[in-house]
Length: 169
Image (tube, rainbow, N blue to C red):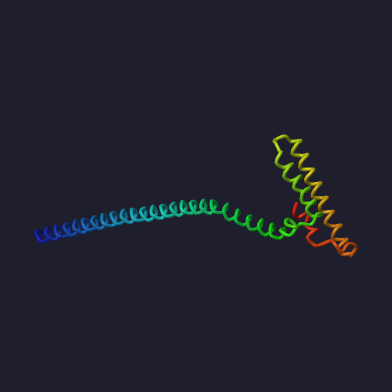
């Protein structure tokens, strides 16, 4: 009987040791799996961060490209506006009437003669600016009086192209 008891205790001890060994192995496997999962999470986060960084860099490059081409688009729009303005003033510019050609010459003297002599002197710039503003106002007044006379029928020789002086200036 003592032998049987000793054998039973020995078997129970072996079972307990086997259970402990199995528990340790399961714990080790769980620990290894947790480490693998943590490494996988780190890899995923790194990949996402790398993708975000690449996307941000690409967005910056795209923004720079847009800025580079924006100047070109603005320049094209400005050229188109200038072309349409120039075409609308072509009648005034090419008119052979003496009154219009005199006005055109006066405007060119102010615009080309004065603007081409500008320097960095504050007084000179202010003087030229004042002269140009005065000339624009004078042209607008002339245009208004010509339009008034034309609508009133006071002078049949007046034409619509004679009222384009301010725009031309």
